[in-house]
Length: 273
Picture 1 (cartoon, rainbow, N blue to C red):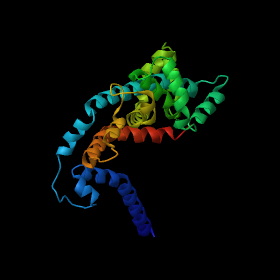
Picture 2 (cartoon, rainbow, N blue to C red):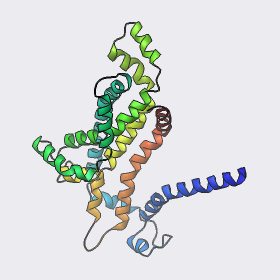
Picture 3 (tube, one colour):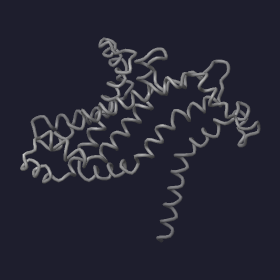
Picture 4 (tube, one colour):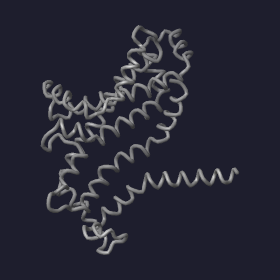
């Protein structure tokens, strides 16, 4: 019975892995094919490897500029999100005050709001604030959009930290901010890694807000580059797949580099909440 159970578990895991990496492998292989091989659905490379697809992708779309914009927006929104939300999450986790449940309910409801419903009010607000078509506008919007997720991840992790550590710091004369910065933050590194990775991926891969709140090429981010490969008459599919690989590789590398801390942060934060 145990052997059968392990066999089914193994088959299930293999299926999940195949569904996860299968599409990316297909895109990666297609990025080295020409249009003839892609449209004919051939499994091989009848016309040879097309390494030129990647250089063509940079010629069709301003990928270098979009890369710089995406890096600035993703890092900026992640830093702003973690700095602001970590302190709020710590106060909510450690202190009881009037309206605490109301705030938690409001943040929970924010997770249910579809992003498409926010496009028009965000466009009006950003435009009136003078932040339309600016990287700062995208940074603020992305940081706010990821606020509920970061709050609950950080709050759940703070609840797992023994209060005795803070009480001993207070007895030694440390204030609130010194205790938070010197004791809580170093312990909460897995939570920061988890929330940071999720926020980074949100900012890196987001398309709707970037399309609505920017215009032209100067302030647009990498996901919008795929628009340049769409044509009414003909498309260079090999270059398009090469661009898709270039867009997705950074987010994969970030997750792989921090996956251990992400898993430990989620596991620890799931104990209490």
